[in-house]
Image (cartoon, rainbow, N blue to C red; front, side, top):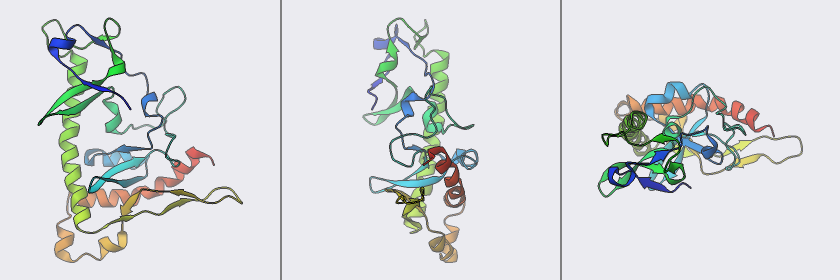
Length: 227
């Protein structure tokens, strides 16, 4: 896990950072959190599901079947897909909580004294690439809140259920069981009365249908695993 440090003009005005070189950092990441805004771009490439987070759920794209190796990261760090989930594209930067506020933070191993790109310009403002990353992360955060509202609505409606995912392997081998995932229950969704169904219009229903449709991408994930 990276050690995050909050950026400070007073402490890091003369510091630099190493730009991300591929996606090695995600090599052992089995899922990636997703946003409502990117559903249409995710659907052609990823199987989507939910994982438990606190007392609720979080929507994710499945990147692994064994819980360890990210099947979308090549040995050289290249992403093996034409679309990278937004939650991975801000690295090595992130938004971190500091009291009641959110601040821009960076993975400590990417901070240097004199190598790479400057974090701040001569006037003490964030360097242009860093500011663009901050703007991107802020946009993601706003959509993350909308996404969580959609997930909560589906949960409150009782249409999220455990996903007993089993992947068939070669002859004579036991199926691979993938634990800890949840999905939308199509049966429960169709059984909602008119009022409950109407409450899910917009983001919640888009997320529900995206998850259901995305299950067709499991074959792609299995092919990447090559059991």
